[in-house]
Length: 355
Image (cartoon, rainbow, N blue to C red; front, side, top):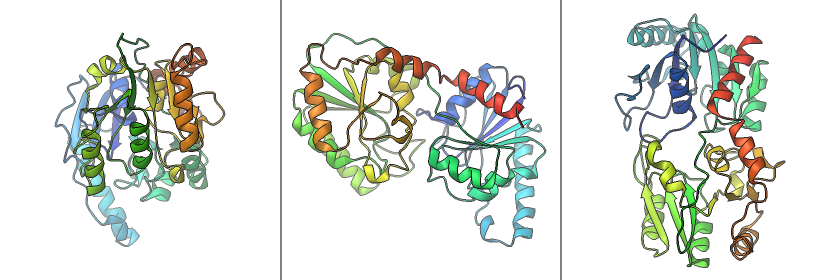
């Protein structure tokens, strides 16, 4: 199946907005290929009513709650009705359904379209089995997700995150800047380590780009997140930019001497493959992190096993002949560019053709 000039329904648990994840990027790139894309946002509380992109129509869908708790015959009847409702909102039958959400409309066999169950996070674990079994094709973005998908559907494949290539420039300045990009409300973030990091290097400005309040990716902020963000705001060597729209992100990323990730190692299965890594790698700059399963066999990002090693790694990188020099720059860029969204869509097409 070639993904051009098709009617494609994307089902996403993250609404459309300033922050973009893989499902949003796939929608935009599929639209550029001449497809009509319908983006069904199943949590529209913080979402945008329109995409501001040609050939992408946003559909706000309020799910029917409690279907999975009903007897199977009744649940299937309601699901059929819900699918009919969605197709009526589209105004046309889809050729392809690409679902990133196994909590709603989880029986993909109830339509006539070719279907994909694409699970990027292990915590997307609702009606996992029925979603996977009912799909023509399953895609997983971590080895842990893929292993689980294969239990229910032999047509399951690993698909790494796509990459939006970012600037490889660095602007001149009189101090070092380390940049973290991502949602500051995520529970897997090692906030304790970040506090140590910021205090250890007062001469480095740590810039945090990402949502610090409610956003299209986070509809609530807990007390721990609020306290952490307040602490960051009080530090003289910290800048919080908040959400930066895609078209302005390169301007911010140019300022970085290095990028850093800091997820709790006990959550290694959940953070085996963070979405942002590909974009950071595409800059060619040094990326620092605790272990990430999907990058364990590569020389990038620069991986550190504990707090002490991470802090020492920054100390050594900062005082080198070429501060924050990346010896694997070319290989890192080549790897990222090989995973552009256009290339990932070609990989999906190949999987669909093999069915």
